[in-house]
Image 1: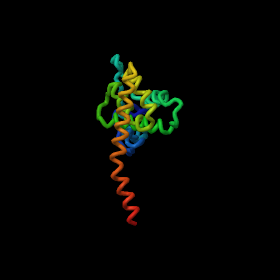
Image 2: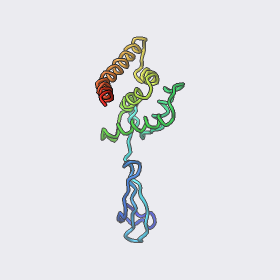
Image 3: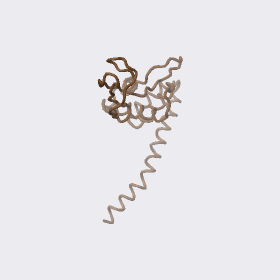
Image 4: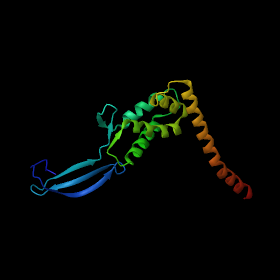
Length: 169
């Protein structure tokens, strides 16, 4: 790392700290020639590859803006959108890939959005998956209902056990 003051090529790390839950590393450095200190910031860049082959940096703001349109008129607040964008970024980073196709970003949005608001999910999915008929909507609604029923069925034994525990107490 070159010293920004004297341009000498050698410096040593004095201190390192993680920032933004480990997504960024801040390093305090000292130049071995002029002894001045400076700070560097290291961040792993996550790139999105568009359909046309163009690569651009991942943007939480783009995720929020896209989901915000799907949530228009729905009872979803800004904090929930920010949390969703963070979940999407975390799931993409967890793949370990530095470059990810844009369709993978869309897929990463669908799960958290379904949990957040089913109507917004249908709106987003209809555009993202290019629904072309009423049958496409019906099929997606059926999958939503099936998933909801499965979630309720898996929660039922826990609920019954809790109720039984409350009765025996």
